[in-house]
Length: 633
Image (cartoon, rainbow, N blue to C red; front, side):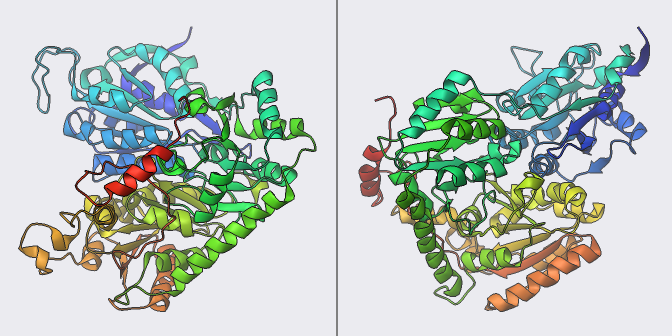
């Protein structure tokens, strides 16, 4: 056996370079597109030196915060439909712990990322070392053990040869549709530099193609029998449809069998808005049209979705008598709520399911219901876009409508947490897509509402811009967020400006955490500690405010500052200038505007939150709670 002597860190990065990924169109790209890094003791000499040696083959990008760069890495995977992965490395201690939030987000959203935190010395000779948190009863524990609950795969490499067993599992988790998520390899700094004779075959190129497991024939046949009993079937498409490249198959299924189709948050922008069977965005932050269809459906075919509470309205969206058929690559998600589980690839399963249904079609009047419901929702949203806030300020619906109208099929839009996901999920209008070109065709959306992580939407466009530059060089990445998210995690704006990755960030200043203020006051509580005006301190009177335009400029961004009182025409002009400026300058452009804090797009669904009996909202809670479907009662 031919071997090569390398350090543990050198072997790891050489293996990363050898991994290839097959895109949905059949072309090949590196599985690992690069690595984000902040060096410190614990990774600067071992992994840092190894990365320097391969800097042209595996680019290293410098971040400002470990959480921010790891979130950007997650966003990169989302923008490539999970076909490429970014890694992120940190020093031991606080640097490592800063990446735990990003691991949680990746885990919740089923997104692959490789996290390489430094660790304390495996040999323990210098213990306790700087930044080491000593566990009084277990000296083998370090802060990196905090990753275990939010990692799909966790390993601490304490010997170089352990890479031979661990790295195939790393590749499996990062590329398996059923198991995709964050991988954490904790790397003690003494082990990183330890040398070993690795087999050369370990570094041969390896292509990771899209696995397409077929469904069990009996499960498929039973699903056909259930669907044939349906009078009011509904197709729900989730993120798994996107990652499988099954948008065309989902539309073909809907058209062949006359089944209305709605989208989850992760499945948004898979269906053209004007499609005759499109019923809108499902869930609490979606469209009333989709929710009405869900309430009336007698059979729901849910494809590639984990059916979280914002999709199911805390399990009040469906009739108690509904039958649910799930198609999912992950059995864990497929069996939820006593559904009939069909475990398999979305693309292949939808094709086989449609063929087995033969000439079965839904009733014509039910098929027509989708268009009727959506027309009513469109009229409502049009009214919001044309209306004005009580004080004449811009509304969220106006901002989202303007960006939606200005966007092209090559563009990419994203947000997370707060109020913007509701505005984008419910109000965005997807143009015509080209489903034969794969899941990345058409205007694409990243709504991070699996973990609802404030700050993601501020740093995610950095990673998305890097990814989209390869596949959609003429498109523009746009992020929409509020002042609260900006203040949480803005430092990677400088990283993107420094590295030359352009995008447009629309910053809507509404004076605080407005969406949580809405939840608070809508339940009868007094506004408290959410809006700046109801928080403790002399600045509550408005005398202490952030100059967001000046701050963004100081981070190297170009800025369009839309003055208070400006209308939608002035915002549109600023946004169009920003799009061009981002392309010309290859830097982020921040559009600052002022929005009304309490004018929202509402879908009218219930969401379960803990409401004290002393608040007026408790009556609505008590009325809705019995409607919550308990599938095994």
